[in-house]
Length: 179
Image (cartoon, rainbow, N blue to C red):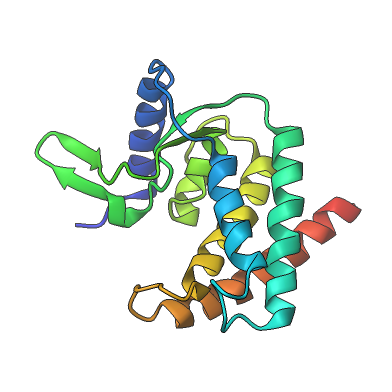
């Protein structure tokens, strides 16, 4: 059964509210960005990534990270990748699984891993920060799809599709910044 965007957003908000109370050591979201930067900057790890895309991804990772750090007001413990593949419906409600990417950062970094329709239902999210986190998230997952050892079925094709999405998002972001 499909999960409605409002229900998904409500579950994610409850998760964030609960995680805000937890104080445990966790990597910072910037560590994950640094790992993507390391991959994109080293052709040994991403040998099939074309030079133009390598430069675009590298610049995007750096620029979005700087922008997000400058804009972000609050940080907390996050799931790290609360995408639909990590959300199960149980008798007791929705349950997030796969905690290996748990990190600290702005909630907007988590929200952008959910389907786009969910974002409109998440209360009080910073819309500009969501836009920037979305672009950053795309740059990261595109990089991982070009990694030499990536094992995701159709990963390279997904990387190409997401690259197209990222270019469109960057164009929209530029237009918004110019207003």
